Image 1 (cartoon, one colour):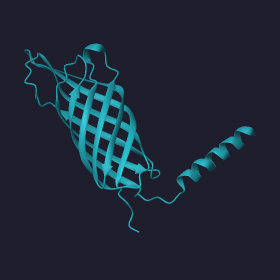
Image 2: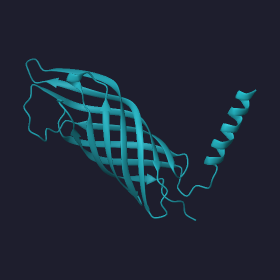
Image 3: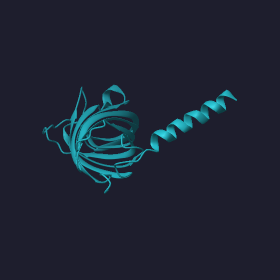
Image 4: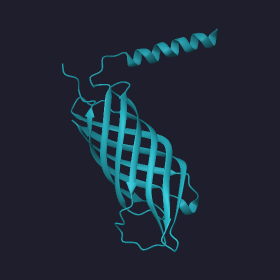
Length: 183
């Protein structure tokens, strides 16, 4: 009986917290481009990053989404290593918390958890490709202003030491929908 009462009171309080009038529209689509900067010892090099993230705003302060990101090989650093990471894909469930700000600038921080996939190529003869996927987490913070976004993300993967691909991602982008409602 106590458990049922607790679940009922908890669900009522959660429902009450999300039942307030929302200032922002519920659906949002983030589009971003960035620069990936590897951290630590890795075969990963600096490269461009492209991401799409559909989100649902549970309230004005909290959103949940699905981030799809691709980081194709670009060889900015001009390396000629015998191994290279030719592509990195990530699929993450994300959540963001927005700090309440009456101005148009909305600071936020968030976390994500999901799957990181990498394709490693060797340049020897014959050229070989190995695909592997492991779980990882992502933390981020940033700013939104009108329909523009800037964010700094740190991605940690749980690969073996020789395949580790932890990286920082600096992103700039825009979002569709999800802005303030018309009054």
